[in-house]
Structures are given as structure tokens and as C-alpha cells.
Length: 135
Image 1 (cartoon, one colour):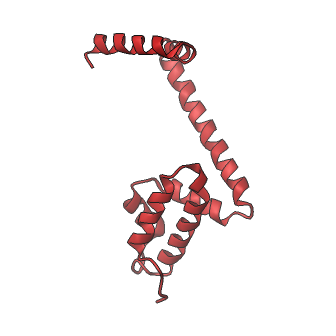
Image 2 (cartoon, rainbow, N blue to C red):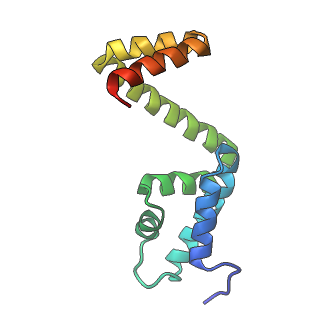
């Protein structure tokens, strides 16, 4: 078996660190995930271990996260793949927000107002709501 600078656990810890560092680190994270996939598929984690199952258990994230990052790292134009990844996530978030607004139009109206008013008024409204709810 090939010798590496990092153990799988060290590599996984580095992936977690990169993933939590924000969008500027997304490409670095994706490249690390691609390396993880290659090494696990080569048998470093044991025979028959699937890289997505290993990653899902190690990171507590969905397999789609791993597949998306691997796709970014493997793309001919990783920067374009990152832009597409962000667009897809933004569209998903918008759909989710639209569904919340449909179910809770009064809450959505309050949020819209709060985004427009002075921060001191926001603090007063928050205090009022906390007093009402006992929080």
C-alpha cells in the first residue's frame, strides 16, 4: 500500500476544517474529498468499504455533500462547478423559504418588516417577543 503524509483520520479532520471555513475553501475541500475517495476505493479503509458510507459516518453529512464536492474537484472547470453548486443551493433555499412563507404568511410579513427597521426597534421587538414567550 502507498505511503501518505496523513492518516485517513487526519485527512478527514482536515476535510472537516476546510468544510467549516466557508466558501473560499470549498475547492480545497473538494480536492481533499476527491483524494479521500481515491484512497478508500484503493482499499486503505478496508476491503469493500464504500467511500460515501465511510464519509457519511465520519462527517455526519449526507452522501450528496460528498458527491457534490467530488464533482467539483473532478470538473474540467472547478470554478464553474462551484458557481453551479451555489446556484443550485440558492434555488433550493428559495424554494424552502417560499414554502415557509406559504405556511406562515404573518411570520414572513414580520420578518420582512424587521429587515427594514432601525436596529434599536428590532431590539425592542425582540424584547417584547421574548417577554411574551418567556425566553
